[in-house]
Figure 1 (cartoon, rainbow, N blue to C red):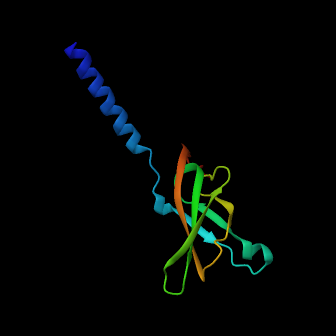
Figure 2: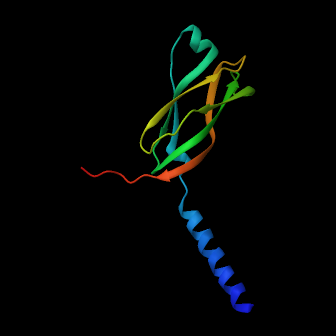
Figure 3: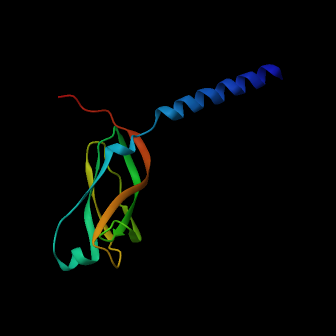
Length: 122
């Protein structure tokens, strides 16, 4: 029984190390907001998320904070980037605007890794 316990601990240790290798740096996932003045732009905040990681990601959840002139949060709305965002690519989003605010800040709240993508050499 002692040998089985050691083997189990070694196996769990190997799994934990492997799981830590599969992480994408959240700082490499950038949000860019479109600057348009239209009826749609007054109801929705549109833009795209740029994925500068080595991973295809999915289920990207966004938070839009409405800020007053002094930077205080007046309220938030949430939305998604639909579909996968390939490594090195971008994907559009459209999130309902909070009802009030002078400026808006968009933050990536969370995402899931799909797979690591190997860059293609020319």
